[in-house]
Length: 401
Image (cartoon, rainbow, N blue to C red; front, side, top):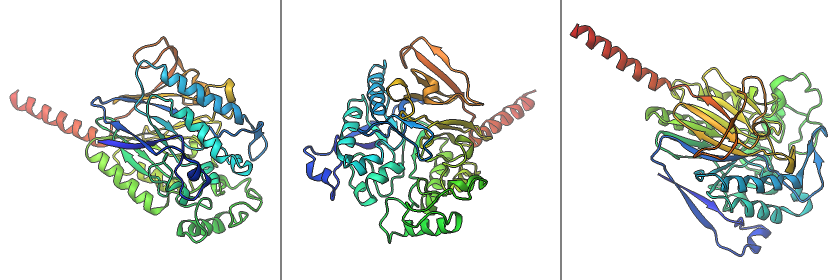
């Protein structure tokens, strides 16, 4: 199986200035399915760069190194190029440019600069839709973007290696941002917000979003910079996991917005995260989901749930800018998931449950760096088959005896 991935310096947006200025045609790259049952890919989340002085988050509590984040992306590409063997792809987990670019009239130049670096990578990139993509472009524009696969409904799957499936999710199918005013997906978001957080204006901008929400628990997620998967996508996710389990495939889920509340501060999950978790934990899925990889919450987090699924929320390069190393490589093996980078704490924070990093001296996967290894449990379907084989063997031995 091959995944068609689009790589280009430019987005071919039919109604934007970027389309009129694009001087090169769309180019395509393919990811061949490796014969091995293990594979590796680069990872970076929330580059969110802008040619602007450093700023702060919504609460004005965390510094954002806008220009330094692009330097981190440049350093990441250099690091991936120096690996002994090229990764299959780079998982760019969304928010590649900041919403500030829209206000500054710099969307085109910022996006071009970011993809100029990504295009130097030794492999294609899997680019995911985050909220800052939707601050810069609407869905109609994203539907023609050369760096996305679909744009309007940006969820799909592909097989990177034998026995593995990547599932890419779009956590803003139900959202106040990106859609036309009369789009049913936006109207559903308006209804949800009126019910869950009436502080938010239907335009997704006005209102005191957090007024009276201090003790609202996980309801704090009902704000415009989060969104929902929606019934259509969740139904598709259920069918994908069922299909994977039936053929003993392991699955890596990628979503800009977080799915498990323990993998963030409890306010940056998808609106319908509970439905997504129910599907992942379902008998149909049979424990096939090895990991869920996200960005969105810039400080990052990590949680291993009761099924043994690793929920990794990767740190944003905005936090430290050029002084940080918020990038790395992930290797998936049948028995473990290994994360490597120049400095693991810059990529996946040191929180309870996350293993302490080891120093890697260098091998066929990478040069000297830090690494952590996360063990993978077998799927339910595989354990059932193993139990059947064991039982049959024992019965045979009894007959022989």
